[in-house]
Length: 190
Image (cartoon, rainbow, N blue to C red; front, side, top):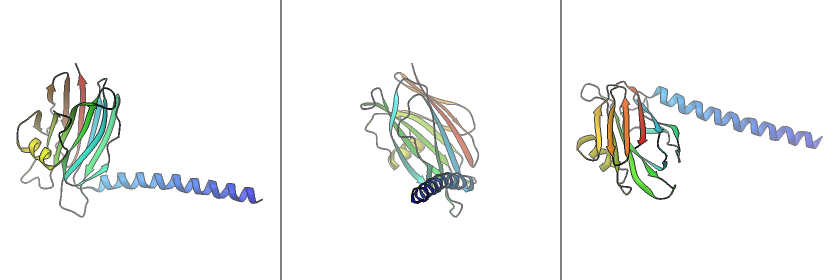
């Protein structure tokens, strides 16, 4: 009798844990849906390299769905957005280290995104770049990719592809021009 009660309690606890995880996932998705400005980035690793050490800097907004810690071949999704209670956009930069052996980075992949709150003065912009592995993922990287020129390509988000090549790597991507934007990025190796 006591064994049955313990088993029932364990099952009830496990069920509550599963429901908690499902609820947390639902709340995250609802937060992103409720965000007045958001961007979902779909990053496809089409190379033989491994992406590690993701870093995120947000100038405005929050990271709702964080980057996968390790990306081999395949696709990962990262989501950023603002809260409905704030008049802010989803603006920032994220990076991954490109490695051949999961240890030593050969390049740092960077993705800049800007989904502004105020469409009267601003538009959606994005940039794709490759940097030395020691490049920090911070406000200065965001500022460089948004305002300046460097080892990256920047474009207005109209759905048209931009492309950046450095050495044996090519980055290709596009972004939609809407308040709940989607960005598709691919890393290729020659």
